[in-house]
Image 1: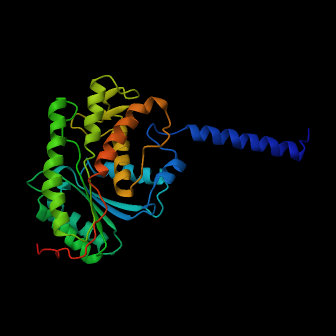
Image 2 (image 1 turned 30 degrees about the vertical axis):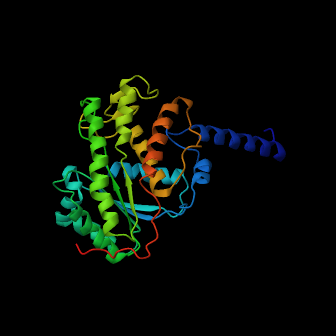
Image 3 (image 1 turned 60 degrees about the vertical axis):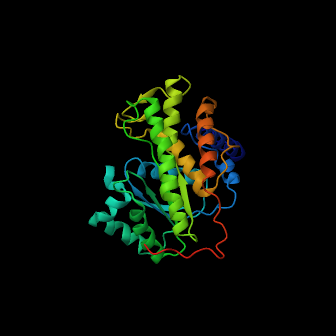
Length: 302
């Protein structure tokens, strides 16, 4: 048997390791950001929060994608839990009235460790300001430093809706929910941070560009597998590209990450990058730093 000198074996081993590393770096989802670049882009909120996200199937799956995005972005100390209920059952009001789900959520809040509570929106029938305040007051009682996040998803039946109708849902929601709920909550709780993101705009812009034939890398409006498509079904549940871009909008809003200088894995994703940056930068404008609280009115009674 031929004996290989140790120095030759060492060289060969190093070459193999380098090849494996090179291949690994080249593998990844279309929307991944380079880890080092993202961590450098994080301005001041580079330490994550202990989060709890509660909602329906147009919200919680984005939260799941957000978990992976924070890992890629190397957001230190980020952790999260999620509580899901389908359809209107995932709205703040319905969750509060669901004894089983409510107990599950309250048990998490009772630890006093939740630093960010994220909720979604469904309709005026079950997502009034009073519904949000029940969760907010309970969370603040357990941890007075809790921050809150309200996210607006895209509308139902996106694949079969006209672009005008689908876009109108997002536009009207931005005005109604942000002005009618988020700004009101900021007034009622002047010492508490409220984040907001109309991440539903992601699905609207993907649909717009797909119909215009300007969305390279996306082959279908709907695909049950969720691969290379915008939606997974006719109801409008999000496919991976929609989830990933929505999660990046969350990353920009919740952790103040600047996405503008990031390297994207595939060059054909220039349109996806354009869509993501535009929405993220515009949504961040609705999330200014908490102003000084000196001489501000005390929280009103519910």
